[in-house]
Length: 115
Length: 112
Image (cartoon, rainbow over all chains, first blue to last red):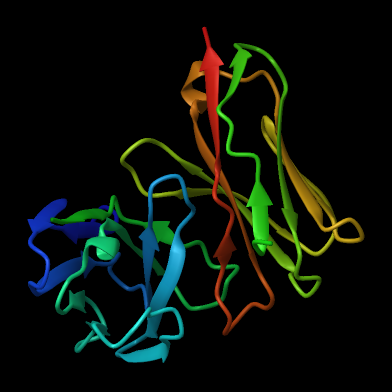
């Protein structure tokens, strides 16, 4: 298909609620990355998958954040008991492999607002 | 001190000007250096990638890495209004494993 797609594009939720953010990577890309970008900041790494497994989840801020990629394609980032500080744009990227020299193609992001 | 620093701007230049965008970093182990362009409400897109020190040119864009000074630059020649965006540097220690650390970005406006 075209590029990386993310749904929803915007999500407004209340403090304490659970949210799921979805990422559809480019077909055939084995590596998938999640980043969080706050206003005026660069993307901050959260987690990346090589295939179905989480190869590095060191960027997840705490155990309220979890991500899955059960079939090695679509990925879902899950946030439990949301807090106002979780408000940010959540970006997904995919690349052919997890070599850093393989271009990471970013989706447009999901803008999460926690009231 | 943040690991990667950039002047946030905004930087405003007239069309046709040469633009210089810079990043400084503290981790001397960084070896892979990238420049991304991000338009408003879009994801970043890769512009240039450089390994270790030296220069790399691609059209109107030139990337420079000076590892001894822990300083990287992106030059844009003959800047166009369509170059107006936020420019992010990113760097990594190795080609696998540890992931990119991004700078906060510099907002550039090229005025027609």
